[in-house]
Image 1: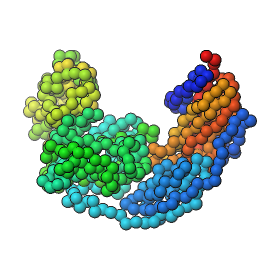
Image 2: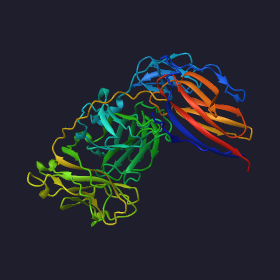
Image 3: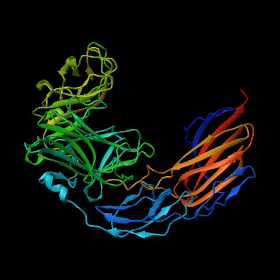
Length: 546
């Protein structure tokens, strides 16, 4: 297997110290552990290494309760994680129900005594505010109710158990955006309107972005229109526990005095902004944690005012431009087109696209070239930002000359053009034709397998004769953690320390090394599973006089 490498850190000290840390993923030698039994390590330290002291087992959680599809407990100071249902998690909650036993786990893998969960009644009274306009995703024809934006093949929606919307993002560094076709409509009451989303997108190092935007944009990027209301929930927002893979309800409440943001009914943010519009599209942006590119789940979406609406029925067909760069009006286009099949039986059609702006360009001159026709495209929002990297959705009606049975099989070229395009890019483009969409979500893949904590290593407090090696195993962003046996430290390819943590989840450890000169140091993470891959952190350390 080809090692997987990634740069981790650089280290400096009083004596000139140059360090680079490299992560390698490798497979254990089967000869080392021919048995399928969990790997167990023995504590060991060379005479120039001092291992951290192991203390008594951690205290148990003082309170554990189960409600609304979550098992939660009071955090235990000093705990690296917890064991519930035989699973390891880093946050003080897990998705589930019933009277589960919860144990705290310390950085050495020691368990506390178990504490059984107390069952508490759930609360679904929040649904009354939406007067029946709540989507539980039991209907798998997603396109009939939402437009879904995301890199195809890297952002994949599917239908999960219980009717949930599951979005897998295996490529990493991706964002999915869901635009409800029903609009949020405000009332004349003191509470103008409300949006609710039940999701796990705001878990550790993930992000949930709710944009309320007049018009029908598919994405607004980092700079929303001036009259939009944006709510961001991520690690910077407190209070509120949000464990990886655990569903929580987030509500945006619009009132005559401002905006309130709630998590499970408790206020977590507020603003004095009052909307100046009467209706808006709701965009739900979801970014999974970067350390474990993976999965986001939406259980429920509710919008006030949407129950009274008649939403036009449309079928979408993605069309990919011959180049994703927006061309100048007279620039030569590649000879790549799109099939005309979606237009043959359509009484009308609309082309929609979202572009990322460069540092200039005249959006008023933006057109789509479909064969010999040039279709003017106009923004679907007002007060949009023209700043570089802003995202703008545009649309235009396909001319009648391109509809019907007569005509070519393909329209070549298909490109977008704009005066002063200046590196503007096409992020998404598709055709809308009238008619009920036949597209149905596939059944979601199984839950991702448990993963190892992220290993990092660095030297601190370095002197000519001493160095402190800090090893961190971070499992905060994992939906479920694969248990580890411990880690080993190698200096110049020779093993000098072993720190066992049977069934461990992670934590932070400091090792004192009394050694001079230059050395190559490897920290090798050992999972319990003898067939699992493991991470190694290499610290290339050199000393020289000033």
